[in-house]
Length: 217
Image 1: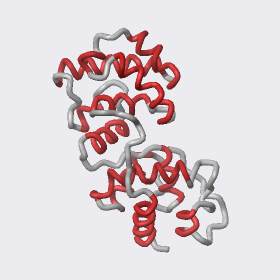
Image 2: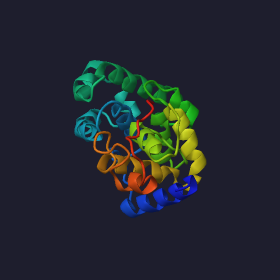
Image 3: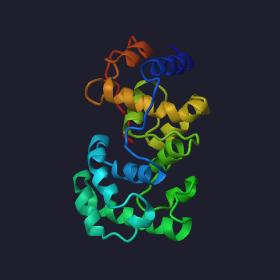
C-alpha cells in the first residue's frame, strides 16, 4: 500500500471508529484545560480527572490560583507524580496570567510555550482544543503509531509532528490527533501490538514479518 493510500485509509477508518472526539481531560475552559494537560505529563488522563475536581474546588481560575500556597497545591496533585515541579508551575503560570494577561490564557502558541511547565505539546493541545486553532500535538502514542503505520521515520516527536502535518490536511489535525490517541489506547497499544496485530497495522502492512521497533521520541 502506497503512503497516500495508507493516509486515506487511516483517515477513513479512524473517522468510522471515532466520529466524536471528546477531550479526555475534564475541563470547562482554557485555563482548566491548560492545568489538566500540564498535570497529565507522565500521568494518565484517568488519574488527572480524579484529582482536578479537588484542585479546581480550591481554585479554577488564574486569579484564585495565583495566591494559593504551593504546598497545598502539591498535596492535592501528589498522586499525579512530579508534584513539586507541577505545583510550582501551576502557581507561577497563574501569577503570570494575572500579571500579563488579565487572568486569561493567551491564544498564542509562543506565549503559551513561555509559561512555566508548558511545553510545545501542552501548548498545542490548548491551541487546538480550547481555541480551535489547527495544531497536531504529538505524544508517545501518536509517535509510536505513526512509525508503525509508515507515516514517519522521525526519531523525535518534533519530526513526527512535522511529517504528520505534511501528510494530513490541516482541517483534520485537531480531531485526528485525538483519534490516533484513542486508537493507540484501545487497539494499537505499546505491548498489545507490535505492528503486526491491530487492524490498521495489518491493513497497511499485511506482509510485515517482524515487529516494528519504535524509534525513541
